Length: 292
Image 1 (cartoon, one colour):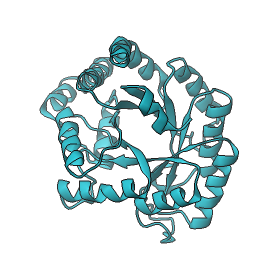
Image 2 (cartoon, one colour):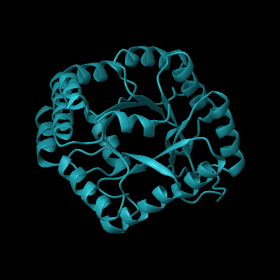
Image 3 (cartoon, rainbow, N blue to C red):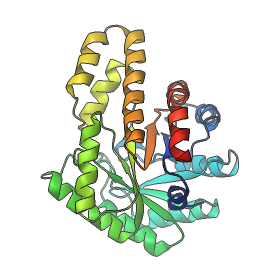
Image 4 (cartoon, rainbow, N blue to C red):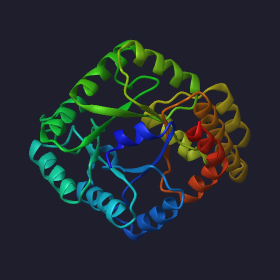
């Protein structure tokens, strides 16, 4: 099933992200995670392509295939542009199509200093157009509520988002954010720019101090006062920070659903325990939204 069709049938889509295990880890670890996430019956699960441009294409395709054909969960396979050649993209798309996968998340990807930049795809919109021309895939794009770190300003950021839509992206998933007002302001800018595709809110529950420092440095998300106070108060108490981080994410999600968001995309960090706790606390709200 194409993800764009799911948005047509549900008021609030609920999805998750997983990433392939590191080369030093056994692949079975991801299947333990998927089995536990499957109990939550997500509308789809996205599978990353490897942080920092390292590329885990074959593993991404295999996990996406197993999600589809073994676990019967609709997958979205990530595909990055900046370190990928046209031939590599073609091979990946053939592999995905042969496995019955119909959904791809087209990203520019992070620059990796040790990897060459072929120059075949400079932007995510270039890769999106390539996938559109290849045919047969529903294409998702990424968006940044607080603006892409390399954007000049918020207006140019949303203006630069239009080419992804024009190239064939049918829906968007946002980068993580901690202040819902940033997301609502972004939706207003997107609407003014003529972007009318479904936009899912990307939520990452932050449950330890190291995760906070890592996420802020890599994605540039700002920390609102309420969040910063939570971290300051509980950073030296791991159990309290875990509970507070879960509560903060749940509060975000409930507010987003109540405000009519198109979907919630949960960055699970391959932690099914966290996903289960959050889903248990939002399930009734999610169900009520989809009954309305």
